[in-house]
Image 1 (spheres, helix red, strand yellow):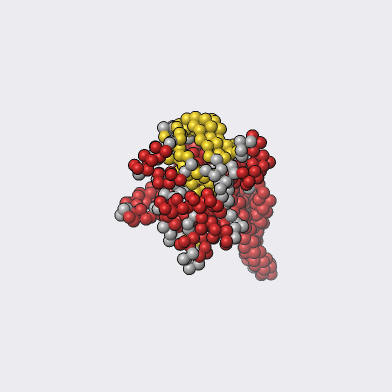
Image 2 (spheres, one colour):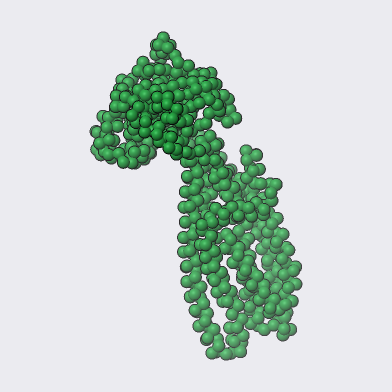
Length: 588
């Protein structure tokens, strides 16, 4: 955690340098929106000019009023009415433009992040909790896209406003330059003094937000267990601790922000007092008119407002830098290597007629930074066969399926799909070969929506008849046909409304509907009774006698229906004989 925080905070880089590089990355990422951002800056500059003119011309009205020149006062009044209307129109247009840019850029960034998450290398992605990924996809993406449009605009317009106001003040009385020389270093120093602390607090807040989202997700996902074990109070106690931690970090950040603002604000007040006092003195000596004094006061007010806006950007800029680092970290993950070769299409075409074999030869694998899972193991599964993988929990059954899916890359050896062992019809198993495979993972994978929508998720063109046929094969149609809306019955989140066994049969039907030559099932029949389990497997193989089926199981009751059984344990994979299978069944 300490190394992670050091990486995020960038202690060695300096805050200003880090922020500069992050802003450079942001505008590089949103390069397609630069024209729109510049257009928005242009609108805001026009807005600033109108407000500047409104402030500058106030002195003329005062001088005309002092001279009792009613005509000129009336003319200036009419001009002011027009300027205020124009200012309102520009404000509305500017807000609309900002909303258009912000929403467009947020959509763009969220889509990029989501695409990266679903395409990223699986092992690298598992370093992040899903709650943390959601935080980066939502909170951090909003912080970046919201400020990409307005951050630079605010700096430019308010800085120009301050410069313009200072110039006007100096034009009215050049002696005011002394005030600027005295006060400017105080303001610059005080605005920087607390930046490191604020940056550190913003990073801590982001880490806590991710922890909270992760905890919320796990709590709600396991709400049945929470209730069943009477853990509501314990879970509430933990969220109280997280909220206390977040509250402390927020208040700490707020304290440093206020301290920074207070020091700078006091510097501004000090400069304003000197400025106005000096201006009154100059009026008293006849060196400045009352109108010029009014302009100086109004310009000083504009400087104060613009300065306050820029000061408020300090915590915003640091939050932006932290969010940018977090998003860049996800976007930097390497994608899975995807290939679409003519050789694969030849293999897939041949597989439709002859089926596809799966071969593993002398394969070794270990998770990054972890123990060895497989040490030079071999296995094979051929068309028309049901192959079972058995063994103790944690020994590698699910890992083997991930390797076959191309989700994990082996350290050595061969893992490939082939038709009749023809070298020209052979491809290493990888993301490219996934279209050959239908997969039923452990756990409930049903999504909220209708049964038909879940089925068509992997077979968009499937007809109602094809869906019903897949449900019949998985022994799911027995209960689906009794539902009021049949295949158009709504499934609740995570399959709420159906038993675990019913959800498993629906998941199997969805995999069958893909009509692939290879079917992988990870504990996919664990909630079915033995008779239904056997019937489902029989139906699957009868419908397509060329299908290659590989399943993992802890229940040996299905092993007698398998053509071959591999035992996975102690980094080895070996075929077990009928006697060992019988022994497993008797022990069960």
